[in-house]
Image (cartoon, rainbow, N blue to C red; front, top):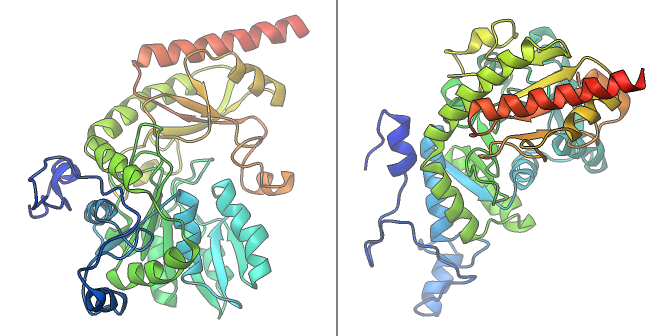
Length: 401
């Protein structure tokens, strides 16, 4: 079918490939490592780009291709590339556009492994990175150098939930002729479409909301045909962060319910944020759906709702945060997000442990900051579990004192 103006319809139909052989409703899983040629001439023609068709699983697969087309449709881009992990997508997308002597401007806070890649590994390749506050236009502009090739950011930022103005960053990048790359994992295309503002490349950890069921590790990059072809023919092909057909199929299945899942995630998250905001043992709640959040003004503009993730700080010390989390019963202590289950984690000791203490402080990641991915359970059960954990934490404090 042609692209619908309704996102809910597109999650089910847009980009779907018709099974010409059997007419299967569900996308077939082409669980094969290689593809047979009719003759040597056909094999040669495919290797030389003279004939379309599949060659080898690392270079393409029909099930994977459907996922790529579906994601390109949902992100409103020309094409997409699927990867074996979110970091596979991040690494391949960056390295396809960088070389020795280049410079990157990145947001001060990032997912821990993305930060480690940029801060610890890129210098070994002669690539320099400047980390800046991307809510500050002056800081962005002052960080740009003659050799700046890429601007990279997340919004909302992982894990402190700072919201960055996509239009601002995209405009600066266009003005300076710099490639703009955004990690859109936290919002997903259900809530935010960076291509609408001129962002060049959009990366996702497809492990999260796109799949939604905690049973896949995968990544996606969306962009122009030229950009995606460059990634596929270089860093995806040669570094090999390839997604399996079965994992691609699971994400295709997850996409069909993306809109309804995200709607419930957002509804539950707003109620949880309001509960936490009123709790005496919570010092701060970072959730874009709360009116006092710095990104609230962008809801209805660049993003359609506050999302399903928040970060909050316990009014206490590191041990209090640990006690609170260890006292939970239904909420699962686990990294990742966007699953049906409510997941909670401690960034300073888990996802953002690659940061040094001073680096975490500069990125706004305190020792008592907790990241919460609100799930699809009944809201009363989520809040009851959180309330019980706060009560257990306060009981321990009284015993100690």
